[in-house]
Amino acid sequence: MEKMEELINLLVQKQLITEDKLLEAQKKADSLGKSLEEVLFREGLVEVEEYTKLKAEVYELPYENLLEKRINPRVLNIIPSEVAENYKIICFDKRNNKIKVGIVDPNNFKAIEAVDFLAKGAGLQVEYCLISPQSFKAAFKQYKTLDEELSSALKTREEKDEELVSSKEKERVDLEKVTKSAPVAKIVSVIIRHAIEGGASDIHIEPLPKESRVRYRIDGILHTSLVLPRSVHDAIVARIKVMSNLKLDETRIPQDGRIKLIYNDREVDFRVSTLPLVNTEKVVMRILDISKGIIPLKDLGFMGNALSVINNNVKRSDGLLLVTGPTGSGKSTTLFSILDILNQEGVNISTLEDPVEYQMKGVNQSQIRPEVGFTFASGLRSLLRQDPDIIMVGEIRDNETAELAIHAALTGHFVLSTLHTMDAIGAIPRLMDMKVEPFLLGSTLHTVIAQRLARKICSKCKEETKISDEYLNRIKKQISKIEKVAPGYIEDLIPDFDINNLKFYHGKGCPQCGNTGYKGRIAIAEVLDVNDRLRDLISNNQRNITLEDVVNSQPFITMEQDGVIKVLKGLTTMEEVLRVTED
Ligand SMILES: [Zn+2]
Image 1 (cartoon, rainbow, N blue to C red):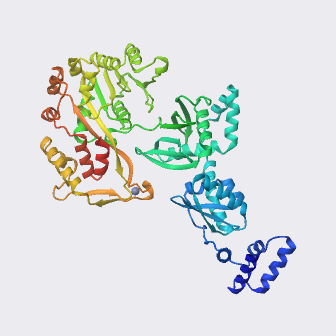
Image 2: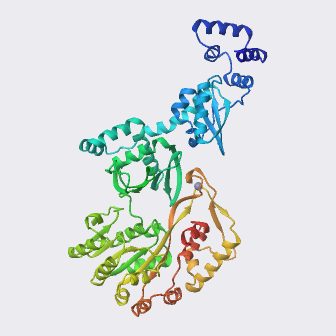
Image 3: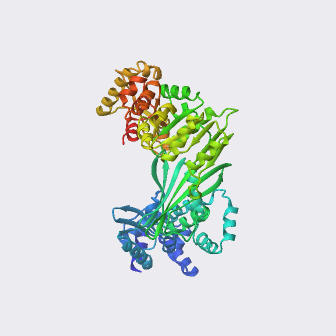
């Protein structure tokens, strides 16, 4: 109690309150059975922050004002919201293993005990600071922002869940437990909504020792977006498993499922896969917005030579066109842009896909199901009996599919597919490795596109910049190669091109691009035209066609060169070009 007396003396001394008013307040407090502090605050007799500062002095604690402070959710959640609310404490800062905890009542030993217990378990040291009740309220609200966000949830297809609930009694119990224990359904909705709104392609939900981390892949890069208490991780995984019709009680093997949602009148598909970890699971959700529009090749980033070879070769009615590149390099998007050119009245287009990523009018699309024996190969076999003109096979990954695709291309069908190779030329030895006869390959393969996706400079914060000598030299070397292979090519694409005055750009970072300097992506591509000269080489069983063979046969622009032109056009940066083209 001495401390309280000391504080009251200080209040008067510092003229924060007159002695009369203080006496009056004390009387009121006594008659109402409340503390003096409560009355002082409620009646507005003292300025709360000034009062708290003095109180901190008396208790020899640092004072902190959290009224305007934005607290990192990861830091805030070191103390669970229930504990924070109960004891009026807030964790608001963390450096290394030191945390700062704001406390409203320094006499609340239970609060200090609780914090010490939590901190000890997490190997953290605590520094206590005194905060006002207002500070606490403002900071505590930040737990709620997530909650509030959560409430504006997605319109999910509830009936799907109900159906599942009624059909499986065991899962019903678990589901109820899960959805009642925490606002888990809301959390999942927010995770999904953020992903769709942020233009993410994948959601990763993974357990860390002390938290559950949600990362979004946006423009090909994973970003940590949400950190949730570790305690809700399993419930979130369970909720997603329920939504995607996966077995809740099966945690030892990976499972694959799907969720269909309506978001802003758009149908969005999620491909869900779970991976067992020690004592828990990780979930990855791939977002397939199948109602999104087909993008013309030009808008994807195809230009110059690449574009004219494709436009020319799609006029054929047979043969094989391949798109190569690693996973996530935009192969299917390109294939669909090409299918869109081919999708004319009077032709029959059939596809075999895994998964179906776009929906296209007038096209017969099938999803392969290897688990029931409906594979690319078996699907292709049955497709050929359906009299298609154009066939798209999601991927050639085995000898049988390769053989069937070549056979189809040879017998009057236009076949499109993808292959995992580093560059366009690499498709030739790869198919030979799959036991395709060289002379059959030579007579069917007419186009190979290799591509990557580079992030585009954000148009809202784009500015001129200098680049390193290393990059400059590399760019100049590629420019001289392009000029040798295709004289005038750069000038055609960049009218004000001046080798002595090269300009470079970057994004300095703004809210539009989340301070990354990049927004959206653009294809960096090379397109191989398998012309007569190359056809002869392939048919003569020449496995390794060299770049020299290629440039002797056509004005071939490599992926890096295409990237350099896009750097010179201010569309992307050399860092990006090298990041995606170098392996
Ligand atoms: Zn920007």
